[in-house]
Length: 218
Length: 247
Image (tube, rainbow over all chains, first blue to last red; front, side, top):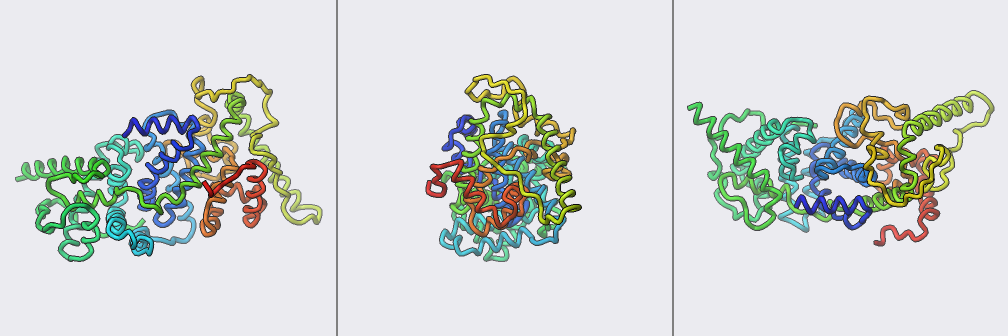
C-alpha cells in the first residue's frame, strides 16, 4: 500500500498525469471527509485549494509520507479558512450540514452505504475537535499514530489517547442510538456486519467516560 | 479494583488501536472480530471507498497538475537561476507592489483620470520573472531533482521566520503558527488557476473568486466579472489543443 503510494508519488513528480490522478482518487475521499469535520460545507472548496497547492508544490515534496504532507497542507488551508471566516459572521455548524448532506437526493440512490458513511462521519464530527481529528486521521486517512501526531503537531501518545477517548465516546453514542432504535440503523446498516443484538454486545460498564457527549460546535 | 479498571482500559485501548488500523485496511468482507462491532462498522462506514461526488474535483486537480508540470518543464532550464534569485525575486515583487501602491495613490491624487490603473499585462505563462537575472543559460534540459540545494520554491516555504517582503501580496498574517508545508502563495500559475477555475461549476466559480487562491486571477483580469473571459483568452493562447472537460 505504502510502497504503491510511493511509486505513484515518484511518477507524479516526474510528470505522470495518471499517477497524479491515482493519488487524487486515493486521497481525496479521506481528505474531504476530514475537512468536512473541520470546516463543514466549505470542505470541497478547501479541498480544491489543497489540490491546487499539492499539484504546484509536488516538485518540492522531498519524500516521507505523502499523505501526511498533503493532509498537512489541507489542515493549514482549513485553518486559514477558519481564520478568514472568523472575521466574517459565522455561517455554519458542520454537524448540521453533514446531516443535511445525508438527506441529499443523490445519496438516496446509493442508499445503505452512503447514508451510513454520512451518519458515521457526522457522529465523528460531533466529537470534541481533538478527538475527531485523531479518529479521522487514524481511521479515515489511514495514518499511524506517529504520523498523525506529526500532522497535528502532537505526540503519538497524545494522538492515541485522543483517539481512544473519541472511540469511547462514539461507543456510548452508538449505545444511546441503539437504545433509541432507528438512527443507529443508518450506521449499522452500512457495514457488512449482520445486524445483531448490538445493544447488549457493548460492555456498558466501560466506565470513566465523562458525561458530556453533546456535539461541540466548531 | 482500580487495577482492574486500569487493565480494562488498557486492553480497550489496544482494541481501539486495532479498530483504527483496521478501518481502512479491511475493505474486504472480513470484519475485525471481537467486541465493539458497532464501533468497527461505524469506522468502516466512515472509511468507506470513495463515492462519486467526492471525486467531483478530479478534473480540476488534474488540470492544475498539468499546468504546474508544464510550467515546471519550461522552467527546468531556469531553475537554478531562479533558486539563487528567490530573495531577489521577493524584493522585486515587493518593489512592484510598492510601485503599484504608489501608482494608485498618484492616480487617486491627481489628474481626473478616474479608475484604477490597468493591471499589468500578462503575456505568456512560460515567462516567469523574465527580466531579472544575469542569465546563465546552461543547457541542462532535465528536471534537476533539487538535489544540490533545497529546491526552487522550497526556499520560500522552508524559512518561515523571515517574513518575506512579498508577504504584502498574499496576506496570511498568522501563517507562521502552524507547521509543515503549505503556506507558499508566492508562485503564480495563472494558467493553472484558470484551468481550475474553468473546470468549476457556475456556482463554485462565484465562491472560488472569494478565495485568496483565486484572488490573483481577479486582480489579473481586472475584476471578478472579467475572470472568465480572461481565462478563456489565456487558455486559447497558451494551450491551443485545449480539450478541457472532455477528457
